[in-house]
Length: 470
Image (cartoon, rainbow, N blue to C red):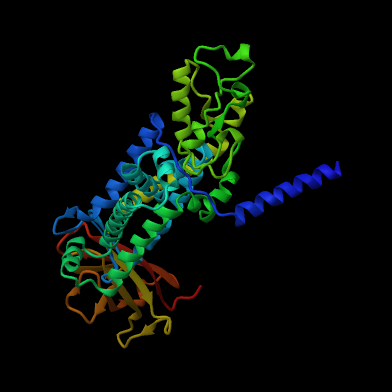
């Protein structure tokens, strides 16, 4: 028994050393056709369309989606965000994390297979490779041939397409931070700034390297998600799995032959499920962390089952419970908690963004002096109003202060005018007759209202301190 355990440990160690030190073999993935492949292509078309088209969409006289770092403005269609609005980014990141938890617990690596940028861009590069070199058998045959003018021409054409597409990708990426029409003019006149040129070529090179050369290596070795995804799985998580009870024993047979008479299962051991896998794994060996849930093996296996007139879903989206013949619970406590949190956070963020007013007011009380008594007998408190205009237009504001009977305020400005995107520090003093002060500390409310648009109004609470003791 000890000898067997030692032998198992030796095999495991050899497998680890092989995965770490053996040069990885190129994965030649065969094209799959079917429902999931069509859904994946649609997802890629939509996501790439958003990425490449959004910088060119105009919204009035400006770019619809633009992250203008020098001006510290972030435009998303009708919304303009400032550095003070980074709280929304924090909530959006939390929302993205909860979404990942929810969909992973529901259907495994759904993100990896259908929406991850690495997967989407790798599919485009594989499509260009097939366009130039042909499908899997032609690619393997070409790579085995010695270098010739024909092979050099085909490879050069492929890499030219890859590099051109990568540079377009890098240009588009920079176009989200520099107005894309200005960037295009600068590119044509060879007048790119140093940072624009750096990020264009850096992001282009990253795309070329990750999608053209590294491919599945990014998913297997570089992406941390592959390592901790299993912590979000349970036996009711939808995974791509091979039905071993139905498929084994494997073996070839003639069409129309009864597998039961041959002592075989439904799997004909055609290995097409391995050939279409973009990470090169055999799904029949069980659930593996290298699987990105692209569902190509489901489509190709269903195609084989149809030809043999066998039932579909030998490989399918299923759960561990279902594979064992047990009841599956898609709606379970974990999914309810994730779902409620996800919907609640999404509605909260949407509400606060919709109610967002493009003017910020902070009231800073003078901490060096609680209050002063004037010659007139009034009690005075000093404040500084920090006003930020987050609108695209310059505004002048009307100030109103309430909270104590007979309260009056004074400032050194006749007109409170704030330019777009600027911050104004406005000293204000409040004066109150001592007879109106009933408590040591009284709440007062500062209200700013834009003269040009009465809907641009914000109120901030502060404390007025008087000499009354209890």
